[in-house]
Image (cartoon, rainbow, N blue to C red):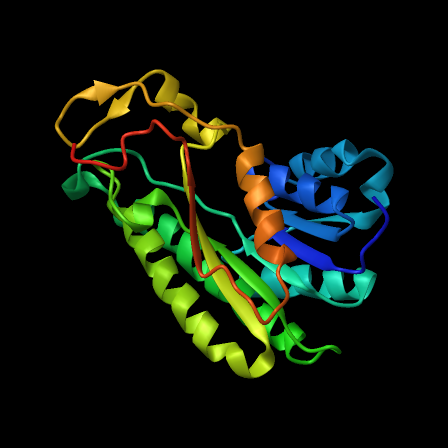
Length: 252
């Protein structure tokens, strides 16, 4: 598709949801900047864009490092001139051990990536979006089904995803004066490397272990494209995209 003039930044763009969303956006005509820790994975995503790869840029990024985040946004503006969309997608979980056995480092690692990383990217997005012409843009935060209900032994991940909801609401409020919209996408069981274990069975709230259905990751990418297809005077505040038959709705 021909360029549409819009520029997106996606963190965690080397695999899974980030990769699928990056490729979907570039096919819609966006210029897309992907950040992540593994440069080889980012560059592989760029290559998958084929003829549109000249509208993609890979920037090795550690979202827990303020200077690295600043570099990501500076490189995006340097190459493409503005930023219209930021998808705060980078995330990680901790080992599925009992809460009382988690180490401080395991807790802190999840908080640093999932929460602090999203905040740092949001802060840089505000700085760019309020200064560009026309002013404004959209920020989408990757929440999770865990932003509504926990899985067993998931305290760090669940706590950060609940916190992302607070960040989303604060960003929506504080962004109004800059024409910055912010929404959250809560995803359940997208088929990525992170959810491979679900095919072998994962712990349930009632103490059993069960294989869980998954959905194609492209369903998430299409939702990201839709959320940003709206004009900035409209916003998808919260959206849930989940495998239809996963054990989420109902009592377990």
